[in-house]
Length: 384
Image (cartoon, rainbow, N blue to C red; front, side, top):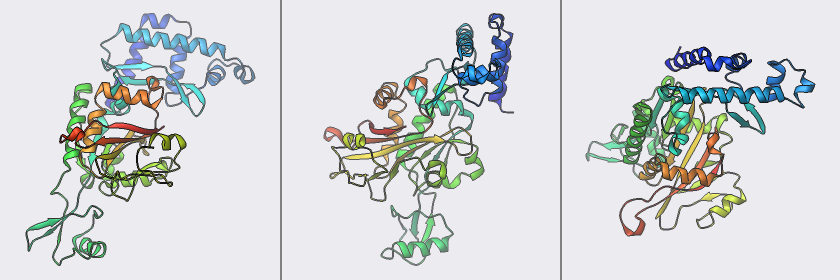
């Protein structure tokens, strides 16, 4: 049993043992019922029928008893939280909105001292902080021993044996192929990904005391990936786990992808409101955004979805044409003021938690005002 689960169970025992909590009529029985259904979102009528044993024909039209009892339980849990500020975990009873069906579900979260906008954004990973992991891209270089030089092609990043790599390179880029080329995978780390990792590492440690480990996609065993709540950097061509995740059936609902054209984003089934928001950028009739004419503005993506294996959330930070875009997005999403602006812009009721799955397109201005560097990452459009 995990440490987190042990700590949560210990918390429930202390809540049951609390004198004030136990005084509420029927409160402990309802709490026990909700704990037994911890992983389900239960409509009021289901609780009315299954817990209070009210006939379904009555429960469907007038689940008054359950609504009153649920409010009492929610208030009691809130009072326990306020009276026990030293507790590491908080047990809450939010109203969960999914697919037009409202339901109640007990949830545990770490009792961070300051629930800030940035905390709201990263809260799903913080809940799985012991499994959190940053996985960066792996970049292939072809080394020529005869000239003591190396070459990298942006569209060529295979992970094969030496002979197979040479053959694939001769087909992809015959103009650059030479006999005796050697594949190198460990000679390069993207400066943007390194800076983004350091930003997230500091933020996670300050918030919950966890040091995020970092690996490249090539050095991450599939077993480790399957058990992680991963933050993935890079695009499908450089990070095999980004590629696998976006190709999975669980990701079919996602519509924002890095396009094969350098500096462009593909928006599948583009909506009128997205066209309106992107009117100042090059945008084709098929929903291909960019590249911008002068390359002064470049795009990046944030994608979040549940881990297909059930180990928490997966978040992808992607960009293709400028390494620092990934780091600027990470900087922006750990700054409370900037995150507040972004969340307000989405129109989502983020105080109840962010959507389980969402995507965002950002733009970053290069050398703003003629000064070398990058501007903040600005949200352009998003989809829940």
